[in-house]
Length: 165
Image 1 (cartoon, rainbow, N blue to C red):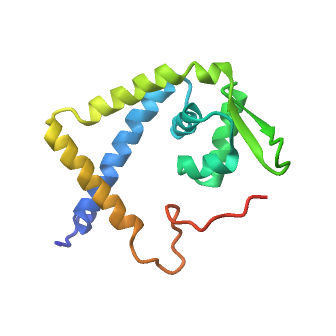
Image 2 (cartoon, rainbow, N blue to C red):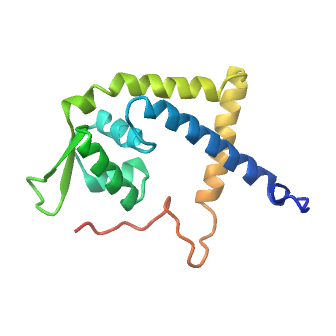
């Protein structure tokens, strides 16, 4: 791997992945903004579309967000009238997150956003190239998730189960 004066040459694959992630997130943010959403909120809504009325802990695990990001997103979403939080009837320590009627109405607009994001992201690729890229990206992700643990390096993908209080 060549190492030169240009920081991008220190890790060209990592640099390319970073640039792609940044561009993808910016495009997604633009599409979501049209519906009054912030990036990450669509992931919470998508989980609730699959199964409404989940505990905050279950959403935390399913959406792959960290605790503070999820908490901030839910506060914004609740203020916007998209979700409501209530104490679980079976566990007074747990909060249950449910879609409101307004939140439920975002199902089709979010499907359209996700479809547009997919179309833009795969523009210029043949179906075979797209499938190969998906396999390659899954392999890259697996290599990162299954890397040896580093001392003191946080790992959100393999975090130990957290006791919910």
